[in-house]
Image (tube, rainbow, N blue to C red):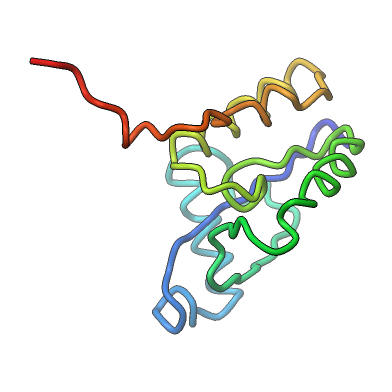
Length: 138
C-alpha cells in the first residue's frame, strides 16, 4: 500500500545440497542484497525485510489438479497490487524470455496503475513452441 516501497523477488537456480541450497539464510540474504547493489538496483539501506524460500523440483507440472489452476489465478487477480510472474508465479513452464516479459508487463501495469492482468497472462499462450519452429531458409 505504501507507494514508496516495493517488493522484489529474486530467483536462484541450484541443486539440493549444493553451496547455494546449504547457505545459511542470513548469508543468502546478504548475498542477494549485495547483488542488487552491484547492478545498481537498490542499496542495502533500502531493504526493509527479506525472506528465503527454498523450493525443490519447482518446474510446473500440468497434471493432477492443474486443470483447476484457473481458480487460483481468478482469486489472485482480485488483489490489485499482486502480480504473478515467471515460471513459479504463473505456474507455467515458460522460457526465460517469457518470464522476463511477464515481469516487464507487471512493471508497466504497476507504473501506470493498471490492475487488469490479462496482458501478463496472455504471454506465451501459443500452442506451439519456438524451439520446434523451422528457422529461416537459407
